[in-house]
Length: 362
Ligand code: 5AD
Ligand code: SF4
Image 1 (tube, rainbow, N blue to C red):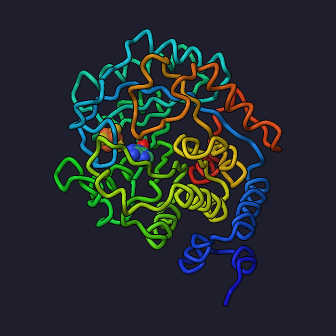
Image 2 (image 1 turned 90 degrees about the vertical axis):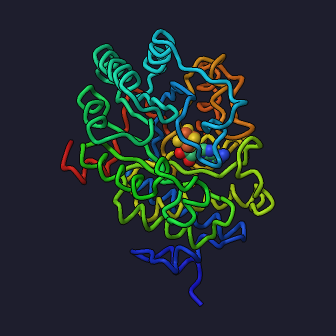
Image 3 (image 1 turned 120 degrees about the vertical axis):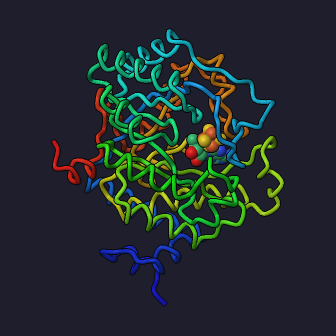
């Protein structure tokens, strides 16, 4: 039987190798994978961490994903949309903190008002802070809308595929025209064709999800040649339909460990992409983001949404940092990353080397 060291020394990981690595339960063997990922990162892109200011623009969503606390039918969610001045204040803080990029995230909203408002925000931010790279995470839109926002000045887009397995995808989304797996896949291609740096990702530890599904997700990322990945543990929310399946879930410890393994294995497979240490990891372990960085992640997204609004952007329970204002969020991240050999790069958008190589840009 092949041992872990042999697999970690291979040039190319195939499906069986990935399944084997994801199945590791022994702590020492896990550490070998994390150490390998960290050395791959150090060699390929250096031990640098990039920060993005995350603005949760609106928790109003037209979709009804079965796992998400701000799904359309959760009548208990208190809905909000940030006002113009709140958005600009969050952007001002992001720039003042020296983060290289701002991420504008929102529930999926269609319609001219949303499209135009966001377009005007993008233009205003781009004009006031030309150095700040604008990232969007606003769901599936038409190619025309992606292009409008791109032309306004947004150059990076995050859209998780959630699971690259069609059957599993439909077990966590309603089966209707609003939640089409094909449309989701197409959206990633449209974003790529528009010229965005494209990020995607999956949740880890969903009901009925297996190690084999996750291995295929990693291969999907490699085949699609993604620039960025954000993935983290699934955390059940009591006001969602998927809560009924909570007896099928892996333990929180297993969801956490497999999430770290996913990050580490992906770093070994794709040395030059950006990989985020997700907030959901931090809600399972207060050292979650630091552990993810030491397992190969290189991006952290401190929340800069005004404190009195962000408590309502609750995708899952126990969202961490809900009582921290933006200064405190930054301090907690800074403190947890420093002293572990990593260097936080301020005033740098952290464009993935993978994107530059793929597009021959500087
Ligand atoms: N647990 C973990 N992650 C979640 N997301 C949504 N709901 C949950 C949950 N219950 C993730 C999805 C989505 C991202 C914005 O948040 O992957 O794409
Ligand atoms: Fe809406 Fe995104 Fe939540 Fe789905 S995961 S309900 S699209 S906010």
